[in-house]
Amino acid sequence: MLVVRILLLGRLWMVCQLSFTQEQNVILMKQSKIGERALQVCNVLFKQKKLVFGLLFICLCLFLVLLPRNHEVLVIEEAKTGNILWAHEISRDEWFHHQYIHSVEKSLVIEKFKLGYSGTIFAMESWTRSFGAGLPYELKGDLEMKDGFYILKNIYDPIDVLHMQPSHLQMHTFHFRETEIVLSEPPFSRTHIKFYVKNMSWPEFMLVKRKKGAV
Image (cartoon, rainbow, N blue to C red; front, side, top):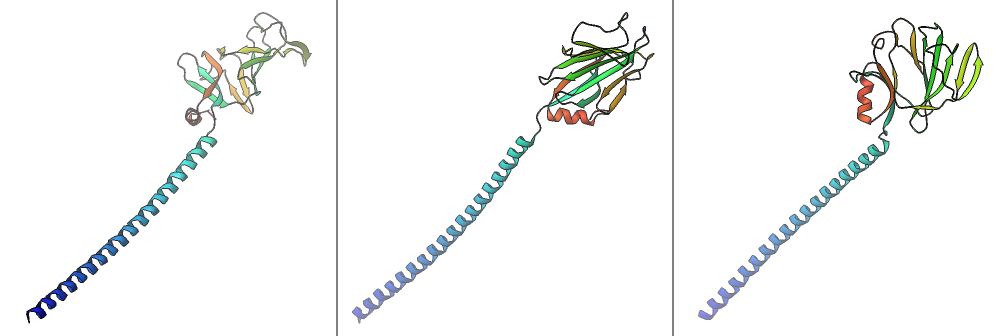
């Protein structure tokens, strides 16, 4: 009887050990599946992050490529305050001019300028009815007569800043493309103003565009 009891106890022990081992295996399998799922989720999230960062990088590259470079802007500025009275983007080899009635000769004077390919403003032409006192005259370029004007052409005189103080007594206008500005009226008249080309960054240019008269 003792032997039978010992054998039964041994078999019971083996059954318990087997059950414990099976339970451990089940737990390990569940943990393994949970780990695999967690790894799959991490892989998906990592791929999504890579996709997001990739798209952000592409957008940044496109922004840098498409971002306009510095703008060259023709500016009329009040010399005393630095306030920009008018501004417009200008391209290389574009012309502009101003014309006025001379206070002494009472004749029309036209002075033409252009922005050279180097980014420098050049005085190009001077149109006068005569060469009287106070009229612009310099022996440069080519002289010809046209419609009663003495015209000096191809002057190519470099100018950093064009200074003037328009009078309110005689008509004085500025012309660029299709735009005409009356300089003999406020805020330009009887004011020391400067004409020059300014290199502006994209944000600065957008800010200037918002101001009145700036395009």
